[in-house]
Image 1 (tube, helix red, strand yellow):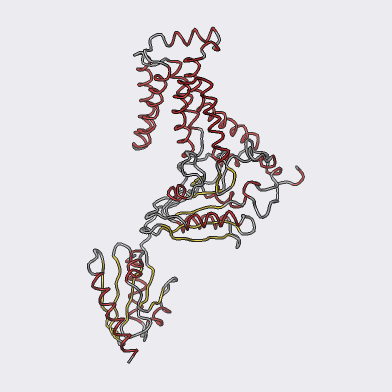
Image 2 (cartoon, rainbow, N blue to C red):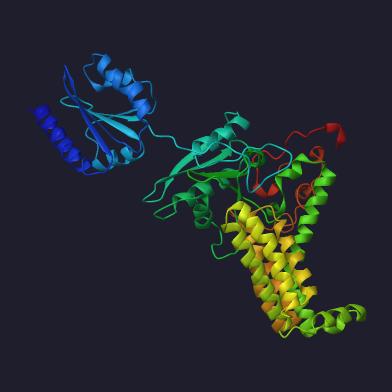
Length: 489
């Protein structure tokens, strides 16, 4: 009696579920007659691969004589199939959206068989677009998390590779994976990343940038505290150093941490070049960044408050270039900086070929017209152009945006307080960087705290034979690592 009552309840719940599903656009439903009773099959047309359904599922349902869904499951060549007895409506809805087909069989237990047949529409692996390199591998991540994880497993085919998957977002339920290497990565770093992701309260996660902003140590800082990359070789390399990588389904960029400020100015192509060449390029980038941040505020501060420190011969040139300019230096600089930002945004938002044309032609035409109209001096135009070029040398796009942002408040401070104000502002930024952390680790390492052993791959890159220890900043469980040539140490 209890069994009959239970079967009636299951049938009643199924009828209610079917009534709700038939209201959904794209829901397809079939009845199949079988010796043991009617079988019901349903799925969402837009989420299921019809080829797999017609090739692997429907023929086997008609070919084999099975008495229950357990026997049918044994004849279906798909993993991750699930047998359920009277699941909730929400669970069935979630499975259908993810590309599952449900099969319901009356008067048996379990009553439901859920088969994953998702329609895989994904981009193929291509070359990196943001972190392009002339030499080295040409594989970039795509929007599918399984493809991205396979790219890493191909490079790190070791059993110690740990992947911890989580669901984030009350609506999107986005899959997030925290990847590390057991025995090398510090468990505290891994647990910190996992716990922060678990604590995220948000309705949707569309890209890894959402995770980057929600788990940052200081959410009010303009500096990114997790480095994002689209290169699979870079992720494999930092995992071997003991760092943690965060993959987000739907995003072609992977987060890594703990990271340091200097890493944002290190291109991964540095490791494909001779160590002397790589070190020289790295120093050029760092000098270019400092030049980009300081040169325009210095120009404004000197011409507004401290023109007496300019050599006489150079002062004559500066005065002559500004004789027709009606604006003070700060207004002149802001106009040109704003123009550069307009050209950048226009070039970034337009199609590639049109954007390149706008950037080149617009810069030449507007710059020449501004000087001829007397709105700006030709000296400042050169300074602004060099500052823009300096900011372009930053390999990580989000750090480049930060550098562009902090120039504007420095311009205002330099105009009001001169070099003293600029010095105080730079000191404030340095204090802010000293206080920043990445997954709880110092962001300004190895400069502060001072760790000389980590300078082997910081401001310069020494040969691989000298890098016999992993970065101390990430607190690796295994500090020593094999070197390229022991005889060179």
